[in-house]
Length: 317
Image (cartoon, rainbow, N blue to C red; front, side):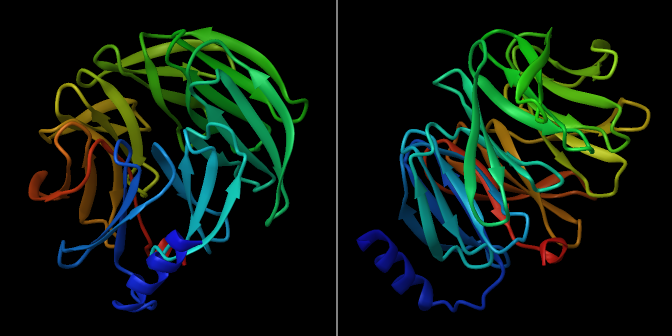
């Protein structure tokens, strides 16, 4: 209660109508940091549950969910201002979270508990349907367009598993490269892209045939994805090589690179498509990149081990 009251009081000072707030998760500090997208100024830093790693908007875009993995809770914020709305407790180890495209399922990967929790979602409430044990360190997820499958990378066992949401069972498991992390479905719904963090490539999986069909060379520590929003290109961050590569999702080729020192991790793109914000995991900063010139134009100090980053834009209104 005290945390929410203090948070709300401070946010009132800069106006609840403000819609250019950047939300950064400082995982090791257990805080949410708010930055001004236009001026790059630090607006506030707020304590939240332990180890907040990932975040995402609800399907109606009325809330931003911060997943506090060690805190075992989901913290709901206003996506425009960062103002707290509510907290759901006893969501055990929500490391990575996701909604199915049809908005009927909410999935929570429990990295340290080696399992995936499947929740039925009715637009407001989450009801636990099944807890599925997986091998080691279930990390990121991606859904197919039909919303009947979710694909989970497992960093500790070098695998990708396909879970049938209709039956809530593991349909298949496929070995992949070392330390698979981020995973994304191509817009044509034919291929899964998997960032191989223990090496320097993105593994391409034909998920219907259940086999790897290609390796796209990127940089060491290939980790996470962010779609360019044009249906053609996606970005992959390479935490070890300090770079971001651009992948053509039609040709499945690496078509460009941006140098980003500091361990680039999660990415977000501004409303006009001209600028990308990237958390720099190793140096306690966020980078702002001009996408046309492919240059870092600003770095902003934040807390320890910044991970997830989010801001509201017109596509979410």
